[in-house]
Length: 237
Image (cartoon, rainbow, N blue to C red):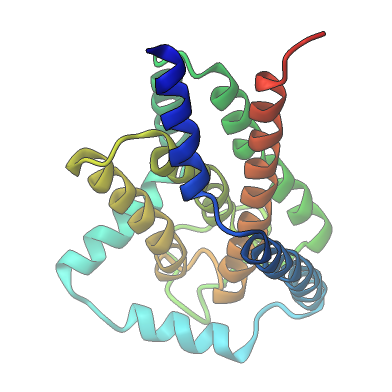
């Protein structure tokens, strides 16, 4: 009975796997994206080092801040608030604890690697040293002391939140709970950038740099996770 079950499982997996040409095409597209995104981030970081802001930064910030809807204002403030310490640590700890309780130790280790993107972002800030938006240009809800490029909120949301979304999509069974979780994660990532611009604490280019770097760190996290999972299934001689 167990042998029959294994054969059925192998047959299902074989049907689920894409043909080799399709796999190669997808791998090539991913490699091209990694190269393009890396080059784009480096170029943007260099430009941000020499330019305190771009014309499009000012245009987008003023456009966002010109809307005064009460619900919009509350959502922007709340999303941005979640990304600050200690709220961000508490949210991350909840997800890490959930993974631990589920017995997913390898997932916890890689999730911590994904969260380490914040340290990388902090180091890059010290190199780029781009000033944050000033009150004489836009409305600044609260001045922050460190530099602005890249946005730490957005970087963590894209890398850590993105990896949690990857785990939810690949490990959880289809259900309304999984769908709700994926939607919540997607909205959190998508709204983090606009919220930081709306609060006057980052420029548009700060957030775009963080999204690009976050996607690269997410790619590294997924690559590490697959390697760890593969090694765990290799029989020891």
